Length: 212
Image 1 (cartoon, rainbow, N blue to C red):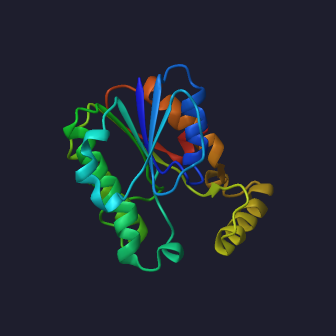
Image 2 (cartoon, rainbow, N blue to C red):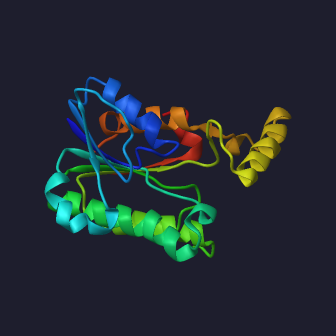
């Protein structure tokens, strides 16, 4: 099986890349990045591209399963419009081209609380992305909705505070539903999902991921 991956340089994507390369079920892994990962492996093909010109690169987007973990924060993006371009427009357009090129499966990293009807911008954006990809009618569509993620070496102040607060409550037996999930664990679950889940649409919610 040939895997396609967008978001390979992110906190989850870099671990997912490791999983896909090491997994013998995947015979080839193609990644699309803005900057080179510096990785080299016989199974790996890396395309450094301009995501604004995906239609010109459509011939490269071929394979069996697309893993979509591209995303950013509002702070890093600089504005809601820019975050929308990165978190919605690029993944939606990439999935559309992949489907046109007969890619049959897609695995999407979304977010707990994602809903196109949410009043929260981030949750609404993720919900609208889920819906846009659903309309493409992939044979297998797997949505992961993790909660707080434990990123190695994070420098995000708000994230550090949130993790400390959750760690305190988890330590006294509260809010275990929202126990932070290490990104390397999420990556492992993502890689195995196409083999473990059936055709059609599957939604793996945060409390189900660790038991998956």
